[in-house]
Every structure is written in C-alpha cells, then in structure tokens.
Amino acid sequence: MKHLFYTLAATLAIVLAMASCDKSDEIIIPTPTPDNPDTPSAEAVIIEAGADGSLGGVLIGTRYSVDYSTGERSETVNTKQSVFDRNFDTFFASNQRSGTWVGLDLGEKHVITKIGYSPRIGQAGRVQLAVIEGANEADFSDAMPIYLIPEPGVEREMNYAEINCSRGFRYVRYMTPYNVRCNLAELAFYGTKGEGDDSKLYQITNLPLVVINTAGNAEIESKEYEITSTVYVIGEDGTYLHTDRKTGVRGRGNASWNFPKKPYRLKFDKKVNLLGAPAKAKKWTLINNYGDKSLLRNILAFEISRRVGLEYTPFCQPVDVVLNGEYRGCYQLCDQIEVDKGRVDITEMEPSDNADEALSGGYLIEIDAYAESEISYFWSKRGIPVTIKSPDDDEITERQADYIKDYFNRMEQSVFGTPADRDDFTKFLDLDSFLRHFIVGELSGNTDTYWSVYMSKDRGSDQFKTGPVWDFDIAFDNDIRTYPVNGKSDFVYTVGSAAGGDVMKNFVNQIIKNNKPARERLEELWSEMRASGQISVESLTEYINQTAQMLQASQRLNFLRWPILDQMVHENPQALGSFNAEVGTVRSFIKGRIPFMDQRIISE
Image (tube, rainbow, N blue to C red; front, side, top):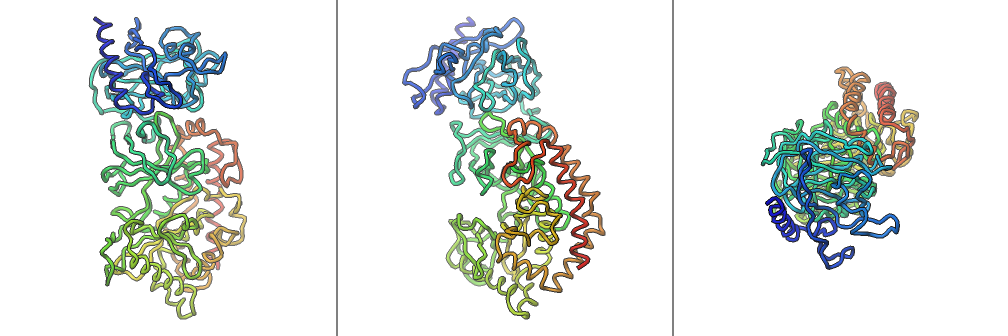
C-alpha cells in the first residue's frame, strides 16, 4: 500500500513539474534545453522512511551529476540518490557548479522539525551557506528558506539542526551553495504531517529576511526588464510576513550594477508598508553595499540626515537576501526615491497639468553625473546634467519638461549671476535644505555628494528644496581619490573631481563661500546641531557601535559569500581584513571629522 501511495505521488509530482517548470535541468522530468536531451530521466525513485524517523518520499532534484573520473556529466555516477543511501562514502556531485539541488516530494504537507546532513568526505566546507527550503509548488516558485547551514559540516556523521518554521511543506530540498557542485554525502528530513501555519517563520539572522524566487529561476540580468517573482519579507523574529507573487524585480544602480553582488529594485503588485517604513508604496530598493565593507555607511549617513533635520530621509533596514535558493548576503532595504506620501511628499503631476499653477509642480529632479544614460534629462545653461525623475519618463509632457528646465536655469542664474541676483537666489533655492544637505555630505566626507543631488519643486512653490540624501558607500574615508579626507585643508567637495566637475564645485562655492548671509546661516545651523548634542563624537560613536553589533551575525555570513575583506574593491583606499577594522575606520573618521567641521564652519 505504501508503494502504491508513493507511485501515485510520484505521478502527480511529475505532472505538476511538467506543467509549471521551465528551468528543466532542475527537475526529474526535464523539457528539452541545450543541456538536456529530449528523453526523460529514469522512473521516479522512492526513498523509504528511515528507522530513525526520517521522512520518505519521491526523490527530486537536479538531473545530472558529474563523473569526476572523466569530467563528463552522468546519470549513473555520483547521483542524487547517494544522499539518501545512508552511506557516508558516496555523494552527490552535480554537473553544474551552482543552482543545483536535491530533495523529496513528501506526498503531502509536513511541518519540518529537524534536518540532518553530512558533507562529502574531504569537502566539509562545501555545505556552508547551503539553504534548506520548503515549498508547496512542484517548481519551488513559492520556496521559503527553513534553514541556512552556517558552518562547515563534520564528516562521517550526521549533522543535525532543529528547524523553527511552523508552515507545512510538501516539497523540501537542499540548495547547493554557490560554486560547489553540491558535494553532499547524506541528507534527511524529519517532521510531522500537517498544514502548519505562518505563526513562526525562519530568519537567517536577527535581521529581516527578503526571499526572491524569480519565474523559472531566471537570473536578474537587466536594469530595464522586470522578472515576475514571488517575494517574501520576513521579520520581527519570524512573526511578520509579507508575500507578493507578482513582484517585478530588476537590477538597479550605476557603478554598483557592475559589482558581483548585484543591487535590485522590487516593484510589488500593490502598495505595501514594509517593516514599519513610513511610506506605503510599490517600489523598494535592495542596496548591495559591496564596496562598503563596514556595511553601515549608508545607514549612518541617513541617521545624520535625520539628526540635522532634513525634511525627508529615506527609510533603510539591513536585511539578509536569498535569491532563487542561494544566499546572496547582507543588503539594505530602502525606499525608492520617488514622489509619494512618506517619501518626497509633493504634488504628483498628471499629463494634463500643462498650464497655470498646475504646471508649476511637483517635480523631482536629480543633478546626476549619469544623466545621459536616462531617458528624461537635460543640461543646464552652465553645463549641469539633470535627470527628471518625476513626472515619469512615459508621462511627462513637452511643456512640463520645458518648464522645469527653464526654472532650473533661472535658479542656476540666480546663484551665478550679478551680486543683485546672488542676494536674491533664495527666491529660487530653499537655503536651509541646501545647507542641511551640505552638512550631511561634508560630515560624512562623501565624494559622491554632488555627483548626485536630489531636488524637488512643489506646486505653487517658487523654491527648489534639496534632498533627500543618497549614496554613501564611498563616504567616511572609503574613497582612494580623496583619502584621507580629514587630511585635506578644505571641504571635501573642493577636492579633485569630488563635486562631479567644476560647474557644481562653483555652484556650491557661490553659496558656501561667496555669499555672506549663507555662510552665517551655515554657522548658525551647525552651532545649533552641536549644542543640541545631536551631532557629537560621543553620540555618533554610540550609534556606530550599536549598528555594528546589529550587523555582526549577518556580516559574518556576508563575507563568507563575498570574501573581499582582504581585497580593495571599487574605490577602497585600503583593505583591513576584518569587519571590525572596517567599522573602526568609520569610528575614527567621525572622531576627527567633527572637530574639522567645527574649525572650518565656525572659525571662518
């Protein structure tokens, strides 16, 4: 009777797999691809339940193994059946190096309570960062992590881990870590039949977990084209869950898109408030922080933005990310910079807003060194590159584009013009927001500050407001072009190409150095911030220490996946070899930077 049940279960699994999977190298019954023949693999293999209580089911997983004696792919040597043969001397070695897996179709839902695994002899480290997943769709499109193996395994014995996930799953699997051909000797699942519930889900560390399963396990290779994906956001010690089966996921970023660890943009099917963020919105970003080996420079800069009183600071929350069953590291879940309530809260324009006061706003623009790579952009009369972020590329009208270009040129002329013009530039530019934004950029020593400056103009307003702040991965002494920042005699924006070119350097000079009322207001604002204690070595050092402690568990796994602590990547001026040393650089920078700012602002 048991064999009859499993035969029926196997048949159903095959039908479901054939109906819903298009990444054929990963299921028992493949469809033709360049790596697969037309013929299906052998008939389904039944794994009997173990005397120790381990679960039985239909064997599922990546079809091809590798025969190490020939280097050729195989279906008879080092196959996936080896992980359930209770023999530590045999192992599954997949033909592909990454994205491979092995598991069971349990026939019905089970709440998994324990797993067991053993690495291939001589390859104990190959199990580290493997992700164990459960699913209820045969193609694992709804897969959810239930465990990540954090350490190398012990050879010739079963390594056990308790599972703390209350959801029931029919399909369970071991996902191969990046670039290791699986190399697994034994695998076992334990649990009880049942639907379970979502009262307690798994988080890899103390940080929230973002899970992305793209359609067909497709790699995200474009910044333009979205892949429809299932996305889970899990937080609050596994008691918070947001699920969206229609999320559009694509790449994002400029220089950061070229890093091995990719940044992403998520567009949910409906607006959502994630993890207590102020905004309820569809679009969110996953910042990779690849070149920032402290993993906290953006977080710290955003905290400084809040403390100096900028009207809007982007929401950010460090998270762990699993993409298509592979652990991808520690990321930063952030707002998408856009016009919306809880974000850049100005009037959102319609294509019909082409006259009178309706034409006056709201606009979101970015002074952007990469403007020419965008669709909707212009060059100012003096050569400042500007991207129009809102209205959107496909909605902005010619009259709206002409209006904001003309108004930016009027603002620019007021800054650069005659003494009478310069005395009245605040008619077009909100001085306090510009100065607060300036303080964040200079206090952080951010080379990128004037390569990317967001500004907005609301309907009925005559002024551009500066902000929000963005992009601090090379701030806090992390840019070889300006390192050491505190060794410079002037503000960092004056150094080399830090301002993105002479035009922006001169633009800032006109306000910060050549306008007496603006200089006086800068000193007044800075003195208020220092007197309040919001900006002090002690308070910011405490914040750095708390943030570093929060990141400890995640950073360890991140740098196992991306072992770059001893490498200089992006614009790094040094490679210190440890997370704690990298955090120490940020801490030391703040200790020297605040006295520098006191001297440079107040003493002038």
